[in-house]
Length: 142
Image 1 (tube, one colour):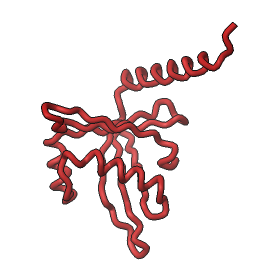
Image 2 (cartoon, rainbow, N blue to C red):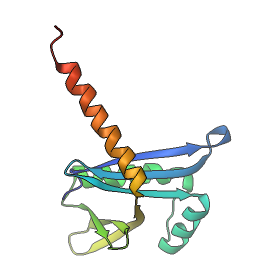
Image 3 (tube, rainbow, N blue to C red):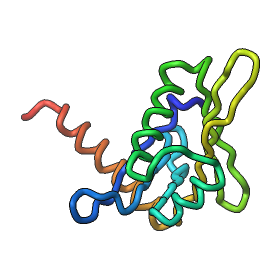
Image 4 (cartoon, rainbow, N blue to C red):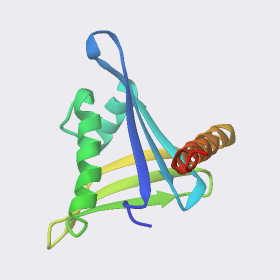
């Protein structure tokens, strides 16, 4: 499954004066309605990731960096690769890798978790209702 087939949604929670409080990324796919994983990161969690992975960006830029990396994987799939590793216990990791011609360099790893069953059900219901409304809007009026 390529990054083209995985839908991603990046949302942020703003506090006072537009300072970022938390970031949430949701991954889903049209081919498997039960595939629904999320990455949630607040400032404290980001500092751990920043230290472990030696990131040079601030938390306020984290969302833009992730969006840029996802877009690079779509636009330049030979140079920028996204590898999604899932484990049986519901944890997963998205690795962003750059092909430097002579070496693959891991740029960033992002931890994900399978969403709880109730959240998955809500997501499926929302998607079903969205498709239903779209199909009904295409029917000719009688």
